[in-house]
Amino acid sequence: MSPEIAQSPLRTAGLLVARLIFAAVFLMAVSFKFMGMADTAGYIAAAGFPFPLFLAWCAAILEVLLVVAFLTGAFFSQAALVAAVYVLFLGFAFHGPGRWAANQNEFGFFVDHFTFLAGLLFAAVHGPGKVLSLNLGWPGRA
Image (cartoon, rainbow, N blue to C red):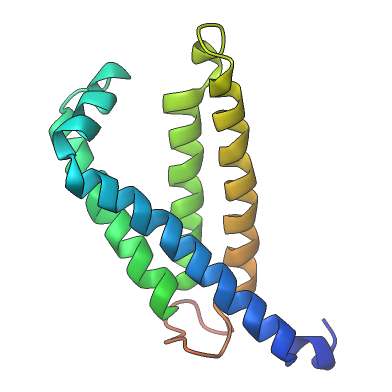
């Protein structure tokens, strides 16, 4: 990447907006969990997972940590990779091929997870940027 692009205000703004979008998506998800943990547990149970309330709380805690990482830039690349694995898991577990025959909308939800996955992988590679970022994590990431 050329120095002009690497230092540009457009790149800085893009990174900040992307971080805010990632944080907002996970903040919405965790908010729904906190507003209806039993409903989330029911959804998890319906997908066939054991210990649904425990898993709902684990998901909520993970999502809170992701929000903090995306907002602060701390451990950003690692958080983006964890989020990517989480989103991939959610896509297959809750919207995978076994659900498409009963509801074709599930295929759309499944594909949406891959779009989000691509953004998270891109973010993991490029890091949080230098503005409004704690830049904790792997050495050399900006």
